[in-house]
Amino acid sequence: MNNQVFFRLPNQSQVLQIQQDSSGLDSFVIRGFNPKLDIDRIQGKIKPVGVSEVKSCVSTWKPGQVQQVNLVDYRKLVDLCIEKIQEGEFEKLVPARQKLIESMIQPAELFEQLLSHYEKAFVYMFHFNGIIMIGASPETLMVREGDTLKTEALGGTLTHGVYSDKESIEHLHIVRYITSKLKELEYEFIQMPTIPRKAGPVEHLSTGFQLKSKGLSEDLALTESLHPTPAVCGLPYQKALDFLQQSEGMDRAYYSGYLGPVYANGNFELFVNLRCAEIYDGHYKLFAGAGVNALSQAEDEFQETENKMQTIAQWLK
Image 1 (tube, helix red, strand yellow):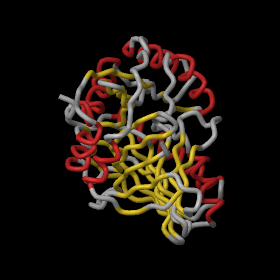
Image 2 (tube, rainbow, N blue to C red):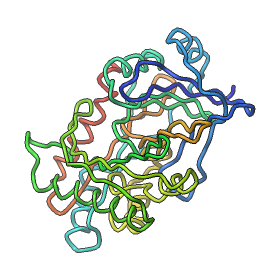
Image 3 (cartoon, helix red, strand yellow):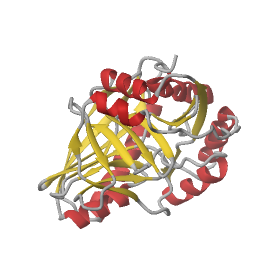
């Protein structure tokens, strides 16, 4: 079977499709969390598709047998992260976890639920090199439209009904990281006011940035420079990345990477791969992480990951 993606952009109604075809000039990129790995790409032509056709295509997909889920105790991992931060080794860490849910809900049915309930999210489902994955991401990594680029800092999840210093500091780390990268690469930009933004079952702080394009190759290099942001990894970046890969007890694979369409005209729309699940025969493997700093509580962070997983889990019953 050719590699294939169905997706719907935020605040749009039309589902789009790209299927592998070397004669097409559009592409869909799928980037794993590990920045050392190559960017995967499906080349073809992006075109509108009806939901009935999506169902027909997806019915031919054959999910594999479920793989083992990591057994790391997430609360203990968060406690370890807090300890390392309080000792001064890190400013912030974003540990992640997996959860396996048994369900006979078909992928096309779940895709319809995500389309219906998350109008502001980037909703997708792909079959790539034997991996089947689905998601409804709330987070823009980078959008290019002509001479304008847009990105955002999204982080700091509403806890206990109010944004505390913990969430404000967590969000500020992301804002400062993005700002430093834009200045380092000499991009002209405008920073928008910070606002709360609902994302399915949870709410986050969001700060938008509008940039002036420096050309397609430099804009794509900027995107790579931002990945992975402190919203999904930590600070200092390389040390946090090494620590998480050693401590999480799992391969994040495509979770917390990025994905999206790159059009023949040079425009692109790329999103952080969050609120997602790998699809297996009779099972869904869900992923979620939580930002940890010196003010974190392990139980709160565990509950945050549970809430984020509800984006998909609630439709698997």
